[in-house]
Amino acid sequence: MNLILLGPPGAGKGTQAKFIVEKYGIPQISTGDILRHAVKERSELGLKAQAYMESGALVPDDLVVSIIRDRLTWGDAAKGFILDGFPRTVAQADALAVMLSGASMAIDHVVSITVSVDELVERVVGRLTCRGCGRGYHLKFDPPKTASVCDVCSADLYQREDDREETMRSRLDAYAAQTAPLIEYYAAKGLLRPIHGVGSIQEIQSAISSVLAG
Ligand code: AMP
Image (cartoon, rainbow, N blue to C red; front, side, top):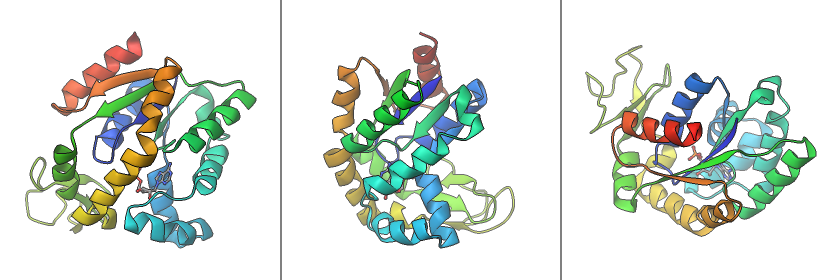
């Protein structure tokens, strides 16, 4: 099964992708994770992407398209994949369509998670990540037992540079201007599966499961 997870920053794409990975045994391909890793490693890709990411803007299409072009050739993607955070522009979606048809592959479902802007800002601005093991927390919805310390490995917790409120607003603007048009794009192809992204993680998981089973 080949899936795209579409939705604004903070909609829960990463969380839901992890559940789909476990349930269906297909890899999650997150351009955000790949880019953050590249920035940490200070690779050529990372150096090119860093300033865009820190300001909340999108990284240029050619950079992310080549990440995906390479990643889809890995053996694990042959049985299916979840694209998380890609495509984010119509140009990326067009490039993906060309890539997939060249490999005789196709997208089965575009799961589009919808959440209001105020809810998104509250969710993202409270997000914390462990520097050691990478576990995610939330100040309000899933706080650590001791402030700023990971329950699992005791390393300290940090806020992603691009999760600060001002950057978050820029990321939402980028989403509205550049990514939201993909909702129409995939609806026109009959691939869009809208999911209301407010509720417990389990409720959203079961809504996604029903869509994928149908
Ligand atoms: P994410 O973790 O998916 O929210 O991505 C974090 C940041 O990485 C975004 O705000 C963009 O700067 C960059 N990024 C991730 N995926 C893409 C993409 N498909 N196109 C352009 N920029 C991206």
